[in-house]
Image (tube, rainbow, N blue to C red; front, side):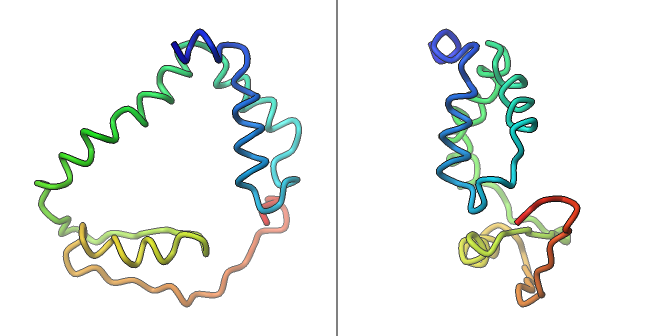
Amino acid sequence: MPEELLEGRFGIVQEWMFDKMLVNKDSISHFDRTIYAKAYDTRDAIRASSAWYQAFPQDIQDIKVMPRIEAPTLGIASSGSIQMLKASLPNYIKNAKMWWKIPVTFCKKSNHK
């Protein structure tokens, strides 16, 4: 059903997400927004993006019995999600080591803010 409702209109959902989640609303240009909307406007694209969320219940069950990862692992977070990463990563990574007091810099050419 989401495919029928959103086909050709997925840009409405994306605009809402961008408006609610972006700190700097201008960090994604009108051109980029148009490209994103076009990429997600087909039934197949909507079905695929929805399937990711639909897999969450199985992921929750799988992670309960999954052994902790022993390989060196890098966790990347934003200032808004670092606390969640610090709280959760050690549950899934054996001997997790994290550094988070690294100065943050932005690439001026990327338009990320």
